Length: 467
Image (tube, helix red, strand yellow):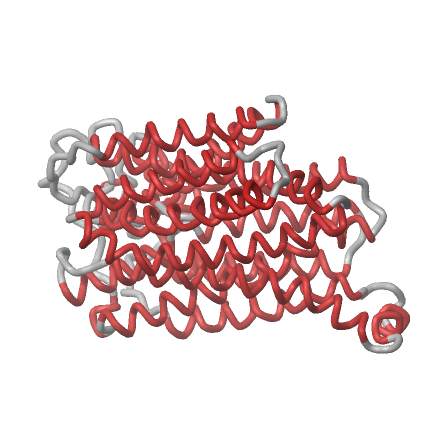
């Protein structure tokens, strides 16, 4: 699912120093990789736990589907609005601080989901989770890349670590989905356990809210791990004036990404194509599952199983990403191959629409898995190319721009798919978009040096922010 350089001001290359080298110089790449994997797993596990029960929990609290759709819109719009500002903030005040803040916001959000039934509280929780999503889209990966570069130089291998991080994220989502769906069911197996829990808390805690509350506890572990395991260098004092002056400049530089670099444009377009593919899958698959099973409840169970399988396919694809790059002789061709697999999967889902025969069902399930497998292969290789193009001073901003491209296109593609008639057309249009972007990687981009984002540096006290 997820993945993620930058252009200096004309003539500024020689006069603007890079950001300070990370304190991670004392961490070897293997240690940094293990910590990056752990952070990725801990962050996404609670989110996976909320997937299976989120809508059901809000419904049980007495909220209608229109209100629930509004809650998710609040999350998406907040994440999109905060994506670039928070990416710039990470480049100014540090990766660890921003990442820990994301964990605290998620902890608060999950607590609200688990205990509150009022619409305003859930809306606040969704907004906080949207902020946390934006805060988290770059700092951990930027910390890992900075640490490896500081220890082994800019030519160090990044693909393996990025692939393992992607696998950890997908594994966390898969495990979280199973835990979130299974815990309320297990509580219902015991004689009166669920009723006792509800009665003992005066209706405040119900079986469906247990995954959210457990997710809040995991977020506390995440914050403590981030603060203790991700060392960073001492940075120049980040005064209020420095943050206010540095972050908007980082945003402006981020918005110019791709304007002068063909490879960066391809990376951002690849993220956009991934957003279109995910929007089609997440919007259209639940209805197909319900139609196949005959009822909404059994369809929801089937979709949860498919989602878990999809995350596992994404994890497998991430694991295969370095091998794909070696086999195709470069990250660019590996992104091409991954995009081709995604397009094939969407095509299979499209041509099997309307049929519930065993062969069509098997082809559709295969297509679903191929979509996530291809995204898993393409993501780490695209990010490898991104990090070789962007300097440490703007790395988190670059990742935020990439995440923003995915989210905005996913929102637009979802609206478009919802407006089109049901059938093969939405699937095939998404497949066409993915294939067209993948073909951009047929011709290799010219090599280029890393470039800094000059405006992303924190400004020491008493100095004037650069414009």
